[in-house]
Figure (cartoon, rainbow, N blue to C red):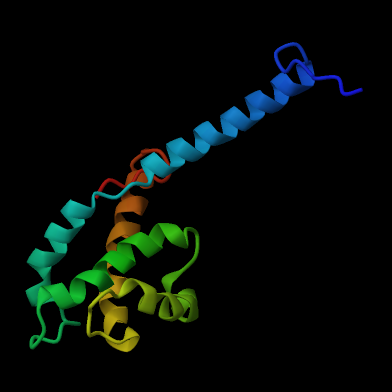
Length: 138
């Protein structure tokens, strides 16, 4: 005969539930804190695009936008790792993120790194000024 466990009365279940809830709360907080204002980033890169040294001026911003987006999104995807150490992974992932961009990884890499560095710099600034870790509000 199966005996059902009343999770409200079993102290082991209450501890397990509390631990799971705490972990999930931490994940939700961490995800929210790490959110990036994509509209603000897009606006920034749209304005900076024309003067960026990595840009082929025969192309338009729309051609580079996926590379910039890939950079700011990848910073958190590969949190704690260095851009220079990720060339193989990023090159592999670029094709899935490039949308209709005509840029090969070799051409997209500099724009991706520029966006990564911008977010990284803002993260370092926020933690150095006493802000909570991962609070990158760009």
